Image (cartoon, rainbow, N blue to C red; front, side, top):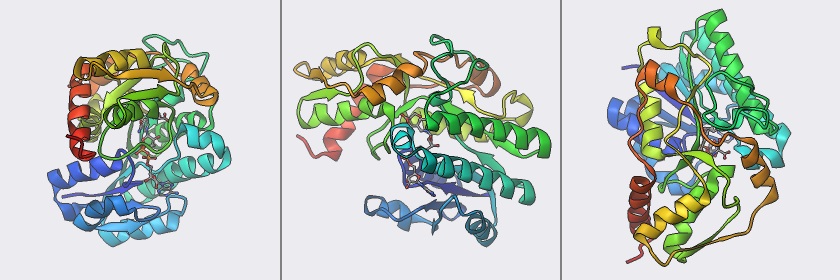
Length: 319
Ligand code: NAD
Ligand code: SER
Protein backbone atom coordinates (compact mmCIF):
# COMPACT_ATOMS: atom_id res chain seq x y z
CA UNK A 1 0.00 0.00 0.00
CA UNK A 2 1.33 3.46 -0.97
CA UNK A 3 1.69 5.73 2.06
CA UNK A 4 -0.08 9.09 2.03
CA UNK A 5 0.99 12.30 3.80
CA UNK A 6 -1.77 14.84 4.53
CA UNK A 7 -0.58 18.38 5.36
CA UNK A 8 -2.86 20.77 7.27
CA UNK A 9 -4.70 17.63 8.36
CA UNK A 10 -6.32 19.07 11.50
CA UNK A 11 -8.43 21.58 9.55
CA UNK A 12 -12.01 21.40 8.28
CA UNK A 13 -11.26 19.07 5.35
CA UNK A 14 -8.21 17.23 6.67
CA UNK A 15 -9.84 16.04 9.88
CA UNK A 16 -12.52 14.21 7.86
CA UNK A 17 -10.26 13.15 4.99
CA UNK A 18 -7.72 11.47 7.29
CA UNK A 19 -10.50 9.42 8.92
CA UNK A 20 -11.79 8.34 5.52
CA UNK A 21 -8.33 7.46 4.13
CA UNK A 22 -7.36 5.56 7.30
CA UNK A 23 -10.62 3.59 7.02
CA UNK A 24 -9.77 2.73 3.39
CA UNK A 25 -6.03 2.10 3.56
CA UNK A 26 -5.26 1.39 7.23
CA UNK A 27 -4.25 3.79 10.01
CA UNK A 28 -0.49 3.28 9.60
CA UNK A 29 -0.57 4.15 5.89
CA UNK A 30 -1.94 7.66 6.36
CA UNK A 31 0.42 10.15 8.01
CA UNK A 32 -1.44 13.14 9.42
CA UNK A 33 0.48 16.39 9.93
CA UNK A 34 -0.12 19.99 10.92
CA UNK A 35 1.68 23.06 12.20
CA UNK A 36 0.69 22.28 15.78
CA UNK A 37 -1.41 19.80 17.73
CA UNK A 38 -5.01 20.79 18.49
CA UNK A 39 -6.77 19.43 21.60
CA UNK A 40 -10.06 18.93 19.77
CA UNK A 41 -8.32 16.64 17.24
CA UNK A 42 -6.60 14.42 19.81
CA UNK A 43 -8.45 11.28 18.62
CA UNK A 44 -7.16 11.73 15.06
CA UNK A 45 -3.64 12.51 16.30
CA UNK A 46 -3.53 9.36 18.43
CA UNK A 47 -5.26 7.04 15.93
CA UNK A 48 -2.24 6.83 13.60
CA UNK A 49 1.09 8.43 12.70
CA UNK A 50 1.17 12.21 13.23
CA UNK A 51 3.99 14.67 12.42
CA UNK A 52 4.40 18.33 13.33
CA UNK A 53 5.11 19.87 9.94
CA UNK A 54 5.33 23.41 8.60
CA UNK A 55 4.77 23.27 4.82
CA UNK A 56 7.05 26.27 4.36
CA UNK A 57 9.95 24.04 5.48
CA UNK A 58 10.78 21.88 2.44
CA UNK A 59 13.56 19.99 4.23
CA UNK A 60 11.18 19.00 7.04
CA UNK A 61 8.62 17.69 4.49
CA UNK A 62 11.38 15.69 2.76
CA UNK A 63 12.47 14.16 6.08
CA UNK A 64 8.90 13.02 6.78
CA UNK A 65 8.58 11.66 3.23
CA UNK A 66 11.78 9.61 3.66
CA UNK A 67 10.98 8.50 7.22
CA UNK A 68 7.59 7.02 6.25
CA UNK A 69 8.24 6.09 2.59
CA UNK A 70 5.49 8.47 1.39
CA UNK A 71 4.36 8.12 -2.25
CA UNK A 72 1.46 10.61 -2.29
CA UNK A 73 0.92 14.03 -0.69
CA UNK A 74 -2.47 15.63 -0.10
CA UNK A 75 -1.54 19.24 0.58
CA UNK A 76 -4.30 20.95 2.57
CA UNK A 77 -2.24 23.49 4.55
CA UNK A 78 -3.38 27.01 3.65
CA UNK A 79 -4.77 30.31 4.88
CA UNK A 80 -8.34 30.84 3.62
CA UNK A 81 -9.84 33.92 1.99
CA UNK A 82 -10.85 36.13 4.94
CA UNK A 83 -7.75 35.31 7.03
CA UNK A 84 -5.60 35.72 3.92
CA UNK A 85 -6.88 39.27 3.31
CA UNK A 86 -5.80 40.19 6.86
CA UNK A 87 -2.26 38.98 6.20
CA UNK A 88 -1.68 38.74 2.43
CA UNK A 89 2.08 38.18 2.58
CA UNK A 90 1.77 35.29 5.02
CA UNK A 91 -1.04 33.88 2.84
CA UNK A 92 1.28 33.94 -0.17
CA UNK A 93 4.15 32.37 1.79
CA UNK A 94 2.10 29.49 3.23
CA UNK A 95 -0.16 28.75 0.27
CA UNK A 96 2.57 28.95 -2.38
CA UNK A 97 5.42 27.70 -0.19
CA UNK A 98 3.44 24.55 0.58
CA UNK A 99 2.53 23.77 -3.03
CA UNK A 100 6.02 24.45 -4.40
CA UNK A 101 7.76 22.41 -1.69
CA UNK A 102 5.43 19.44 -2.25
CA UNK A 103 5.89 19.60 -6.04
CA UNK A 104 9.70 19.80 -5.81
CA UNK A 105 9.80 16.72 -3.58
CA UNK A 106 7.31 14.96 -5.87
CA UNK A 107 9.50 15.70 -8.90
CA UNK A 108 12.72 14.48 -7.27
CA UNK A 109 11.29 11.41 -5.51
CA UNK A 110 8.45 10.20 -7.77
CA UNK A 111 5.45 11.21 -5.63
CA UNK A 112 1.98 12.31 -6.71
CA UNK A 113 0.34 15.48 -5.32
CA UNK A 114 -3.29 16.41 -4.71
CA UNK A 115 -3.77 20.08 -3.79
CA UNK A 116 -7.13 21.88 -3.81
CA UNK A 117 -7.97 25.10 -5.57
CA UNK A 118 -11.17 27.04 -4.91
CA UNK A 119 -13.97 29.13 -6.41
CA UNK A 120 -11.67 31.93 -5.21
CA UNK A 121 -9.48 31.35 -8.29
CA UNK A 122 -12.07 33.40 -10.20
CA UNK A 123 -12.63 37.15 -9.97
CA UNK A 124 -14.97 40.00 -10.84
CA UNK A 125 -14.34 39.73 -14.60
CA UNK A 126 -15.10 35.99 -14.73
CA UNK A 127 -18.51 35.04 -16.21
CA UNK A 128 -20.68 34.68 -13.09
CA UNK A 129 -23.22 32.03 -14.06
CA UNK A 130 -22.32 28.47 -15.02
CA UNK A 131 -18.68 29.59 -14.93
CA UNK A 132 -16.81 27.34 -17.40
CA UNK A 133 -13.80 25.18 -16.58
CA UNK A 134 -11.60 27.36 -18.81
CA UNK A 135 -12.30 31.08 -18.49
CA UNK A 136 -10.97 34.42 -17.16
CA UNK A 137 -9.09 33.97 -13.84
CA UNK A 138 -8.23 37.39 -12.39
CA UNK A 139 -9.08 37.18 -8.66
CA UNK A 140 -8.73 40.26 -6.45
CA UNK A 141 -7.90 38.50 -3.17
CA UNK A 142 -4.46 37.19 -2.17
CA UNK A 143 -6.07 33.82 -1.44
CA UNK A 144 -7.40 33.77 -5.01
CA UNK A 145 -4.03 34.81 -6.41
CA UNK A 146 -2.39 31.85 -4.62
CA UNK A 147 -5.07 29.52 -5.97
CA UNK A 148 -4.51 30.57 -9.61
CA UNK A 149 -0.74 30.42 -9.18
CA UNK A 150 -1.08 27.04 -7.44
CA UNK A 151 -3.15 25.70 -10.34
CA UNK A 152 -0.65 26.93 -12.92
CA UNK A 153 2.35 25.49 -11.13
CA UNK A 154 0.61 22.10 -10.79
CA UNK A 155 -0.01 22.16 -14.53
CA UNK A 156 3.62 23.11 -15.14
CA UNK A 157 5.09 20.32 -12.98
CA UNK A 158 2.81 17.83 -14.73
CA UNK A 159 3.66 18.85 -18.29
CA UNK A 160 7.35 19.66 -17.69
CA UNK A 161 8.37 16.95 -15.20
CA UNK A 162 5.58 14.36 -15.43
CA UNK A 163 4.47 14.81 -11.82
CA UNK A 164 1.01 13.29 -11.25
CA UNK A 165 -0.81 16.42 -10.04
CA UNK A 166 -4.55 16.48 -9.36
CA UNK A 167 -6.89 19.09 -7.90
CA UNK A 168 -10.42 20.44 -7.66
CA UNK A 169 -11.83 23.94 -7.32
CA UNK A 170 -13.83 23.42 -4.15
CA UNK A 171 -16.88 25.56 -3.50
CA UNK A 172 -17.71 26.53 0.11
CA UNK A 173 -17.73 23.38 2.23
CA UNK A 174 -20.38 22.80 4.88
CA UNK A 175 -19.71 20.36 7.73
CA UNK A 176 -20.42 19.73 11.40
CA UNK A 177 -17.28 17.92 12.59
CA UNK A 178 -14.59 20.64 12.41
CA UNK A 179 -15.23 24.37 12.19
CA UNK A 180 -14.02 26.18 9.05
CA UNK A 181 -10.74 28.07 9.22
CA UNK A 182 -11.71 31.65 8.30
CA UNK A 183 -13.27 31.78 4.85
CA UNK A 184 -15.98 33.83 3.16
CA UNK A 185 -18.32 30.83 2.89
CA UNK A 186 -18.16 30.19 6.67
CA UNK A 187 -21.59 31.85 7.09
CA UNK A 188 -23.13 28.72 5.59
CA UNK A 189 -21.72 26.66 8.48
CA UNK A 190 -22.35 29.22 11.24
CA UNK A 191 -26.03 29.47 10.26
CA UNK A 192 -26.61 25.82 11.23
CA UNK A 193 -24.73 26.09 14.55
CA UNK A 194 -26.68 29.23 15.50
CA UNK A 195 -29.99 27.72 14.37
CA UNK A 196 -29.44 24.90 16.85
CA UNK A 197 -27.98 27.06 19.66
CA UNK A 198 -30.20 30.18 19.42
CA UNK A 199 -32.89 29.59 16.82
CA UNK A 200 -31.65 32.63 14.87
CA UNK A 201 -28.64 33.89 12.91
CA UNK A 202 -27.37 37.23 11.59
CA UNK A 203 -25.64 36.56 8.28
CA UNK A 204 -22.45 38.43 7.35
CA UNK A 205 -23.22 37.67 3.68
CA UNK A 206 -26.11 39.52 2.04
CA UNK A 207 -29.50 37.94 1.34
CA UNK A 208 -29.19 37.52 -2.42
CA UNK A 209 -25.49 36.71 -2.75
CA UNK A 210 -25.14 33.35 -4.45
CA UNK A 211 -22.11 31.08 -4.04
CA UNK A 212 -21.50 27.43 -4.80
CA UNK A 213 -21.52 25.07 -1.82
CA UNK A 214 -21.06 21.37 -1.09
CA UNK A 215 -21.60 19.06 1.89
CA UNK A 216 -18.38 17.59 3.28
CA UNK A 217 -19.12 13.89 2.51
CA UNK A 218 -19.34 14.81 -1.19
CA UNK A 219 -16.09 16.81 -0.96
CA UNK A 220 -14.25 13.88 0.65
CA UNK A 221 -15.65 11.48 -1.97
CA UNK A 222 -14.47 13.85 -4.70
CA UNK A 223 -10.89 13.84 -3.37
CA UNK A 224 -10.80 10.04 -3.11
CA UNK A 225 -12.43 9.61 -6.51
CA UNK A 226 -10.08 11.98 -8.33
CA UNK A 227 -6.98 10.60 -6.59
CA UNK A 228 -7.91 7.14 -7.89
CA UNK A 229 -9.12 8.22 -11.34
CA UNK A 230 -7.64 6.76 -14.53
CA UNK A 231 -4.90 9.29 -15.47
CA UNK A 232 -5.53 8.82 -19.20
CA UNK A 233 -9.02 10.33 -18.78
CA UNK A 234 -7.84 13.52 -17.02
CA UNK A 235 -7.80 16.56 -19.30
CA UNK A 236 -6.98 19.04 -16.52
CA UNK A 237 -3.98 18.85 -14.18
CA UNK A 238 -4.54 22.26 -12.59
CA UNK A 239 -7.94 21.77 -10.93
CA UNK A 240 -11.50 20.75 -11.90
CA UNK A 241 -14.61 22.87 -11.23
CA UNK A 242 -16.93 20.97 -8.88
CA UNK A 243 -20.15 22.00 -7.15
CA UNK A 244 -23.24 20.54 -5.52
CA UNK A 245 -25.52 23.60 -5.16
CA UNK A 246 -25.63 27.33 -5.93
CA UNK A 247 -27.36 29.02 -2.96
CA UNK A 248 -27.75 32.28 -1.02
CA UNK A 249 -28.60 32.89 2.68
CA UNK A 250 -32.33 33.03 1.93
CA UNK A 251 -32.19 29.56 0.37
CA UNK A 252 -30.56 28.14 3.50
CA UNK A 253 -33.14 29.94 5.69
CA UNK A 254 -35.96 28.34 3.68
CA UNK A 255 -34.37 24.92 3.99
CA UNK A 256 -33.78 25.23 7.78
CA UNK A 257 -37.41 26.36 8.24
CA UNK A 258 -38.60 23.05 6.79
CA UNK A 259 -37.13 21.39 9.90
CA UNK A 260 -37.26 24.34 12.38
CA UNK A 261 -40.26 26.52 11.38
CA UNK A 262 -39.44 29.20 14.02
CA UNK A 263 -35.88 29.83 12.76
CA UNK A 264 -35.18 33.54 12.13
CA UNK A 265 -32.58 34.96 9.74
CA UNK A 266 -31.26 38.52 10.12
CA UNK A 267 -28.38 40.37 8.46
CA UNK A 268 -25.25 42.09 9.72
CA UNK A 269 -23.33 42.25 6.46
CA UNK A 270 -19.53 42.39 6.65
CA UNK A 271 -18.39 44.60 3.73
CA UNK A 272 -15.03 42.84 3.38
CA UNK A 273 -16.38 39.30 3.10
CA UNK A 274 -19.40 40.46 1.08
CA UNK A 275 -17.04 42.08 -1.46
CA UNK A 276 -15.06 38.84 -1.70
CA UNK A 277 -18.27 36.86 -2.22
CA UNK A 278 -19.41 39.33 -4.91
CA UNK A 279 -16.16 38.76 -6.79
CA UNK A 280 -16.74 34.97 -6.98
CA UNK A 281 -19.05 33.09 -9.37
CA UNK A 282 -22.74 32.50 -8.61
CA UNK A 283 -22.52 28.98 -10.00
CA UNK A 284 -19.92 26.73 -11.66
CA UNK A 285 -20.18 24.44 -14.65
CA UNK A 286 -18.65 21.18 -13.44
CA UNK A 287 -19.36 19.06 -16.53
CA UNK A 288 -15.65 18.27 -17.24
CA UNK A 289 -15.34 16.69 -13.74
CA UNK A 290 -18.49 14.65 -14.39
CA UNK A 291 -17.18 13.55 -17.81
CA UNK A 292 -13.54 12.83 -16.88
CA UNK A 293 -13.81 11.13 -13.47
CA UNK A 294 -17.53 10.62 -12.89
CA UNK A 295 -17.95 13.31 -10.22
CA UNK A 296 -21.49 13.07 -8.87
CA UNK A 297 -22.44 14.69 -5.52
CA UNK A 298 -25.17 13.02 -3.45
CA UNK A 299 -26.37 15.86 -1.21
CA UNK A 300 -28.73 18.66 -2.27
CA UNK A 301 -29.59 21.55 0.07
CA UNK A 302 -32.47 19.90 1.98
CA UNK A 303 -30.70 16.56 2.40
CA UNK A 304 -27.65 18.42 3.73
CA UNK A 305 -29.75 20.60 6.05
CA UNK A 306 -31.47 17.58 7.57
CA UNK A 307 -28.15 15.84 8.20
CA UNK A 308 -26.43 18.99 9.55
CA UNK A 309 -29.24 19.74 12.01
CA UNK A 310 -29.47 16.12 13.18
CA UNK A 311 -25.73 15.83 13.80
CA UNK A 312 -25.34 19.26 15.40
CA UNK A 313 -28.13 18.43 17.88
CA UNK A 314 -26.05 15.42 18.94
CA UNK A 315 -22.72 17.30 18.91
CA UNK A 316 -24.04 20.29 20.88
CA UNK A 317 -26.05 17.98 23.18
CA UNK A 318 -29.36 19.74 22.51
CA UNK A 319 -32.49 17.67 23.17
P1 NAD B 1 -8.54 24.95 7.37
O1 NAD B 1 -8.21 26.37 7.61
O2 NAD B 1 -9.69 24.38 8.09
O3 NAD B 1 -7.28 24.04 7.68
C1 NAD B 1 -5.99 24.37 7.24
C2 NAD B 1 -4.99 23.70 8.14
O4 NAD B 1 -3.69 24.11 7.71
C3 NAD B 1 -5.12 24.11 9.63
O5 NAD B 1 -5.24 22.97 10.44
C4 NAD B 1 -3.82 24.88 9.91
O6 NAD B 1 -3.33 24.64 11.22
C5 NAD B 1 -2.89 24.29 8.87
N1 NAD B 1 -1.76 25.18 8.54
C6 NAD B 1 -1.74 26.53 8.44
N2 NAD B 1 -0.50 26.95 8.15
C7 NAD B 1 0.28 25.85 8.05
C8 NAD B 1 1.65 25.62 7.76
N3 NAD B 1 2.49 26.64 7.54
N4 NAD B 1 2.11 24.35 7.72
C9 NAD B 1 1.27 23.31 7.97
N5 NAD B 1 -0.03 23.45 8.27
C10 NAD B 1 -0.52 24.71 8.29
O7 NAD B 1 -8.69 24.75 5.80
P2 NAD B 1 -9.57 23.68 5.02
O8 NAD B 1 -10.92 24.23 4.88
O9 NAD B 1 -9.38 22.33 5.59
O10 NAD B 1 -8.90 23.80 3.57
C11 NAD B 1 -7.94 22.90 3.08
C12 NAD B 1 -7.64 23.26 1.64
O11 NAD B 1 -8.85 23.24 0.87
C13 NAD B 1 -7.05 24.67 1.45
O12 NAD B 1 -6.15 24.64 0.38
C14 NAD B 1 -8.26 25.50 1.06
O13 NAD B 1 -7.90 26.61 0.29
C15 NAD B 1 -9.04 24.50 0.23
N6 NAD B 1 -10.45 24.86 0.16
C16 NAD B 1 -11.26 24.81 1.24
C17 NAD B 1 -12.60 25.18 1.15
C18 NAD B 1 -13.54 25.13 2.32
O14 NAD B 1 -14.68 25.62 2.21
N7 NAD B 1 -13.15 24.57 3.44
C19 NAD B 1 -13.10 25.62 -0.09
C20 NAD B 1 -12.23 25.71 -1.18
C21 NAD B 1 -10.91 25.31 -1.05
N1 SER C 1 -14.38 28.36 1.77
C1 SER C 1 -13.29 29.06 1.17
C2 SER C 1 -13.25 30.47 1.61
O1 SER C 1 -14.32 31.02 1.81
C3 SER C 1 -13.40 28.99 -0.34
O2 SER C 1 -12.18 28.69 -0.84
O3 SER C 1 -12.19 31.02 1.74
